Length: 152
Length: 290
Image (cartoon, rainbow over the protein chains, first blue to last red):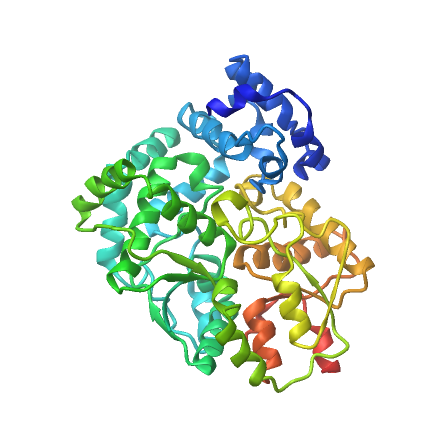
């Protein structure tokens, strides 16, 4: 995080940002707002979630600021403070309940059988004891509580 | 040579052809793929990394610990899985962080000592002995095919952590395409993201599709017949995303997409259905020319 105080607002990040072509995301502005401590401008804005974390800004930053990693940290704070989007909470729930981030249903089982791989993959879906580990891990990390609170 | 096959989510649950093709190819190459039994989502770097980095790191370390138990590196076919597991491996190089993670893992009966890590399938395939073997097994000429390479973001970046080739001018997959007998084509904004990462596909799918549309149109203009990539998540976005663009009337001419292991399978003479190419939403029209 400390690296962002080296920002000279040159705009290489915004100029390189593919998400900036299609959305209001202005990476330079996010960095400036964080420097100035303008929390709500950053945490309450949808723009923070427009970044695809492609790392182009971070690669090109002439001051070696870890911009993409900072966006992720800012999102962690936003998530904790209740700014998570609904579809993101859905993904979080899916993981907490199944160990995967997407649903596995009969249609997907059939797809697997059509290419001659095991009808259920040898992941957490085949090992209930592994699911118990994941469940306990999300409890120990505090993630489960965070997500369930958001739902309420 | 042996790896533990980390499947992730998209390959086994949405595009099992990617898994099937990789298994077939590795069998042909005589490289053993163990099951990484009980693996979970990596968890996805831009989604779960954006929600809670501590939870993300713990789950990643658990996945790595399963491969470590088998005394082999994990192998991935998704840049997202790669980003998470490779970055976690990197972050856990700090002893006090590793200790803190193990303190929690011990409560679920696990431990990770960083004796083994993770390899991207491209890294595995481009080892000289492996690549030489692939070339010696070539059966189906791909001559005349023009292929646009999409590297995806997290195979290359952040480059300080990944430590491969230049993130601005990568060439490894282009060279593979050339060696297999096809012609790699340059196109505008070749290194642009597929649009799906960072939770954008789940949180704002219109934005994700705009990336995809630009990418497909640029590859089309360069005369590409198909797009090859090294990532299950890019595959999902570029294939399913194109179908959505077609449904919305925003895209006229789609381009088929293929994972690098599927392309190699084709060059080795394997049947397109065995490689799961028929499970793609965008049909592989060029096959009639081979």
